[in-house]
Length: 448
Ligand code: SF4
Ligand code: SF4
Image (cartoon, rainbow, N blue to C red; front, side, top):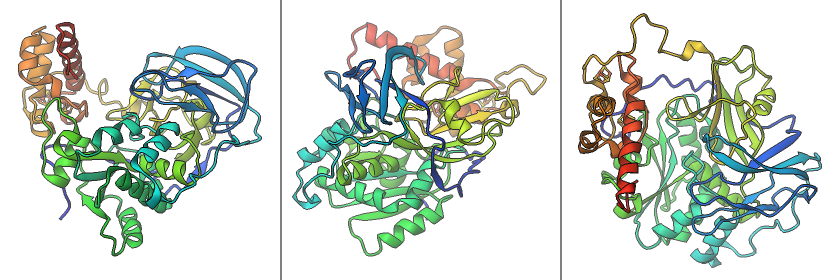
């Protein structure tokens, strides 16, 4: 029987690109604009300047002190400027702009790791992953080396997240289907780093072709098992996935490692394998490009730093003016105001959607809570979102906190199900950020 969790919603999946083979972005971008912060943590420090000639995979941003992550050139060419702009998260970020010379020259330092996996130590694997600038590619963007470090000696379960529960997105699905060996080998490297003997690759049951492909390659393997999960949103959230596979619940303020689990995205595992086997840092990623405004939706291997518009142009351009441009899925993605926004290590999808996908505004009555209680039924972390939303509207933060606003995983399921089109997720998110800010102001250290 397929694994699952309590709550959640069955969303229309719009996986229109599930059969679209991954293709390299063509034409390649004329220029890329590579943000120095594509991860959670301290921004990287540029080590190149205007006029420098760089190669693919060359270090262009050194990891900042603390929780840092290096950044590399995604094309060969000439650095034209280092400047600040608004990035995909809406914050100001320093970027290195490179004019592509289309020579695809790889940096000379790029070479496979010289040892076999069996002879490689966990410390060496952490170093490879760190130097490759790998982060959580499901959108979380937490530096992967730090996640491995924090899990060593603490976890008993390694889970590879291939659930990909957000509507539209099929990038991981296609990666598992077209490069299953990369995902499997990346998983083996993680097992070695964590000194574990068993990993699970979790996949929703709307991707049974990927399940079959991986099971075929893993036949007889005791190390790695494929686990099929029910297709339900947000199955790909770490808490829900852990619960579905192990029955363990994550208490508020705890990390998965605190309850013996560590989870890496399937694309992250594949990137780890590439870094180990080829020495290539994370400089490109598969992105689903879709939405009713895109002429030729598909899955595209994109150099990091390419602009959203260049990626869409490589998919035949627009058939109509989008009402919304989203990085990520429609449930948890971030709407972009600037089509020149560069893609980053955490960009899973680019969606260009018309007004037809907008529920609010299509109906006569204004958004309102009719107290039906449906949002409480679907909330995967058992909140009462309508109560928290009303406390937020009334400015009663103490009550919002008492009702657990901090535990919200921002999945959007409550807004999705709401028959009154009440923007309940937004209010809960606001309450959550205010509660956390208030706690930090009063010196609470582990406020999330
Ligand atoms: S916010 Fe929406 S789903 Fe929740 S109780 Fe109100 S009307 Fe129902
Ligand atoms: S309250 Fe938060 S966690 Fe619960 S359904 Fe809404 S967005 Fe998801």
